[in-house]
Length: 246
Image 1 (cartoon, rainbow, N blue to C red):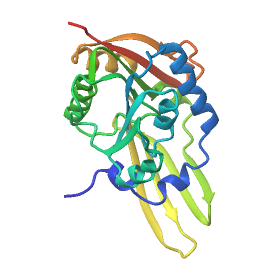
Image 2: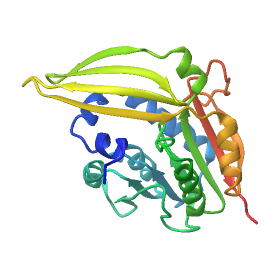
Image 3: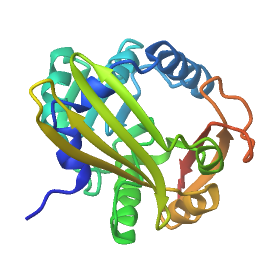
Image 4: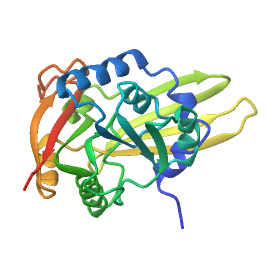
């Protein structure tokens, strides 16, 4: 059975090389701002869904909360496990399927880790799994790109050099998805090809999707400083949902 694009790409040795220059300072500030805004009670149970290598789950655990990180990538989870401690654990898990039921006080889905799937059914499955993991009254935060901003600022072609490896990147929009073709050229002359395909969802899509899971939108933000969301200009679409207590 052929792997989906995110299974091949996220488990490849090239993925962490391409993205090693991400602004960790800004990302850490984002987590700090969220914690200050949400004010979790001491010893809250927190899920980091699609946690990657666990840096932000670790940051959440440093506040003393019980944190669980899940990710489909065995390679990323293997690296994340170096951070494990009494209140921090990591598991290989597909977000489309339930993981604990009515257990977490908060769940986070950072840095556009949704919208990977080709079938609408899979998005619905993931949304229901997110909601099911939360206690009644629990809070879900989804951090997505702002589709308007991405379309206006799309860089069609880019070349990135890292550690003797050259990434030739082509970006375009196709069938409602932001597509990134990645050609990896190693110094030995070998070429490998990967692709990212992320759905260009807008706010109304998320509101409708999660309303079907008894989740109601509470707040939106437009960047990692938690500024107000402006559809035409904000770089991010950050959504805070609350699970019904009924």
